[in-house]
Image (cartoon, rainbow, N blue to C red):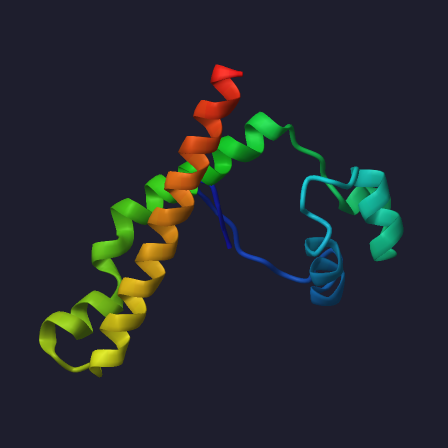
Length: 116
């Protein structure tokens, strides 16, 4: 799992996949750590709280890292070698559009907040 610019290997030493997926659905900024633990039916200690600024930094770090690594992905190798179907390139273009569109909307939203 990649969060920000950090890599983590997930194991089931503490908790399990089901708990992780139960918690994940509440990570929308509208629930406190205590609420998430109660709604997901997990121990409060298994839900770590981070600040909004720290969360944004981790997202921005992840975006920066993705931008640096994208050329090394096996999809690019397959596209340049011609070993992948044309639909793969279309899918990549579509995903890239959504990524850029999201970043654009985020920056516009940030500017509106600063101007208010």
